[in-house]
Length: 193
Image 1: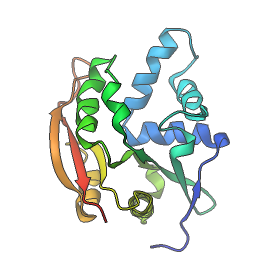
Image 2 (image 1 turned 180 degrees about the vertical axis):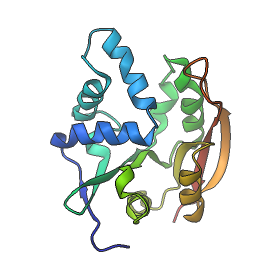
Image 3 (image 1 turned 45 degrees about the vertical axis):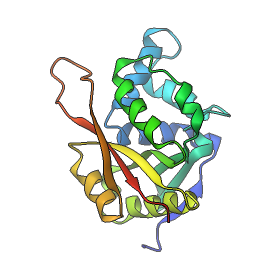
Image 4 (image 1 turned 135 degrees about the horizontal axis):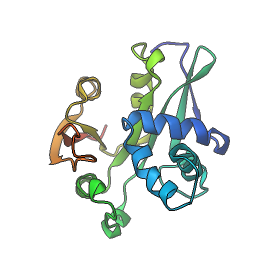
């Protein structure tokens, strides 16, 4: 692991960076979801809504569940993870595009779930993603670790595969737009350490 990469627990004031990096990690899916709140007048832009969601005090997948990687004196990436408990069984998808991912998550209750792992493009390829992934595996504390990625995200599939994750299931993604590229959501799991 590169010594120049430092990890730290996120704070509430990191909410803007967290929103940007969660959107990068999801290839724009997060901002697409947040846009609904713009249309409803809750915020002016999708990233503003993301920032508000990331700054919520008790939100699952918010700043309290986030670890920031820093390199070369700047924020470089983020991993957002939490224990996936049985409460997820009570959540219903209100947006059709989230239904396949929610269904996959419901199959891995009891695991540590990595909801986002993203690194700024100009800092990729130097071990930041690997360092964040190792930290999430350590945080899992002897639980299996699960995550969902897109079937066409070769870099992510490769990183996770090299680090002991195996495909557990797939679900076809609901296209966001008429001309959206078709892909599947891939649930990957790593056995407990």
